[in-house]
Image 1: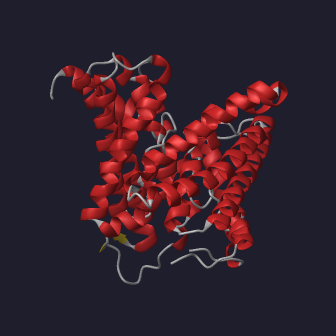
Image 2: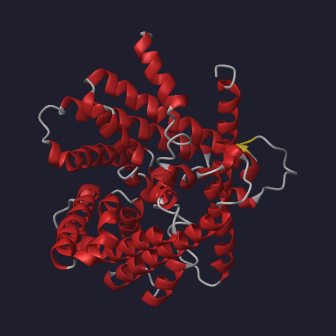
Length: 197
Length: 204
């Protein structure tokens, strides 16, 4: 059975109602580590969006044309992680070769992305929810944009609360988690709009 | 097991260098699976197994792994063990496997395992690495169980699916939803840091 939602709905749902970060908690490690300053947060978010869109498409093809016909579905974890790692490596080499200026902006974040669970998470959700190709790409792209939105917002807030008097033991990760929780609460306001299984 | 070295490894893994609230690693799943204790327990056991086994394997292969491709080798070792856990859960605990969904697969990208392989197993012999994996995994599981306990009691009024609060209890729906995961982890970190300061002050 295929999912019956059309691609635009999935796209908007993955940005707002089912934000990959605030509803599914994916990509938390880099979310907390890289959100101290706005520029690097935007850089990482952009890189994640790009890689997520491309690897979701690639992994869809790998899963449906390689793993399913040969009955290798159990090997999907290994296959997905290899595709992601290889793609990241390739992109890093290409950017380094052809656009050094772009490399300065994005290059440092690319190695981090291989172990960003949001990327692998989107690929696994795509399989579990039985999306078709167009739906998967929409989901990957929307998920990436949603992640970019969340990390940009958190970085902006964290820059502002730097001077706020926070209890000593709550500084750093503690307060970031509370901010993220409040963001998750406010994103729940969108949840009446669309329902995604 | 009771050798002093093993005890040090365990104390470090569970408290002094606890992966979740000390190093803020592996919190994706710490937040996602902690609304029910049963799921959390299975997830914790799975993680302990994967961390211990991949730590031991990485350590056994540490002399023959070329340095440049070691990340790739580690990821593949971890992915193989995660695959075993996934197949095991699908075969024996299909309901829990369904509830955990993609989070079993996401053990692969759980930074705790990668961190232990890279930071400990790569330079230490097999047996201590194995123990270190168990210790870190236990530290992770204990934090998750604590958070899950609060969330399940307040959110469903039950522990491991067994009712503990009276029928008249009105469940706090927010506790089983995403924001409460963030708040609970933040609270846990707050308490842990405060306790830490209390206990270390007399020494300094």
